[in-house]
Amino acid sequence: MEKISKKMKKKIEKFLMIKNFFVVLYLNFKPVYMAKKEINKIRVVIPSNVREMLVLAGLINAKNTALGADSPLKILTWDVIGPTVPTALTLHNEAEALMRQAEEKFEQRDLLLAPIDDLVKQSRDTLKGVYRKEPRKLGEFGFTVNDTPR
Image 1 (cartoon, rainbow, N blue to C red):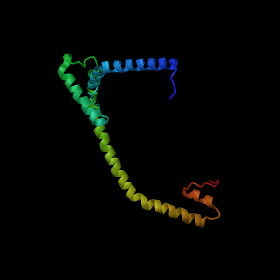
Image 2 (image 1 turned 90 degrees about the vertical axis):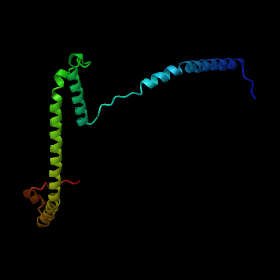
Image 3 (image 1 turned 180 degrees about the vertical axis):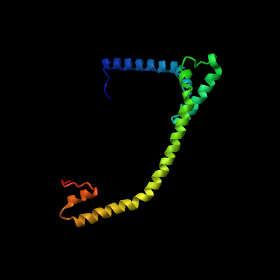
Image 4 (image 1 turned 60 degrees about the vertical axis):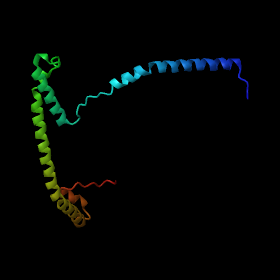
């Protein structure tokens, strides 16, 4: 085993003293850190869903209105924005109803789309055969004809 020089011994002792200092420091402050961590465990959730957020806003506005001048929220603009919450919720409900109607319309369209798509492809193929020497004539039927290479 090699002998350790005096210089190296001093460096090791200094390192151990510093390390011990941080261990003692950590052990002394650990309870404070734990107490701080306990406080941060409480979370107040704001919904990311628009409907749920508008319902929450309505509840906050109702409580704020009920408390009147004693409300801790009187410093905010609930008196201006609060009355718009029911309107926003109504518009949201109408928009959701229209989205459901749109989905139904898309489903009805999709039922009709498959045979139409097939007929368009058949028309293209037929016209390509008829106008084999003049493919630009397909443009007269509404097709876009590209004569440039891919």
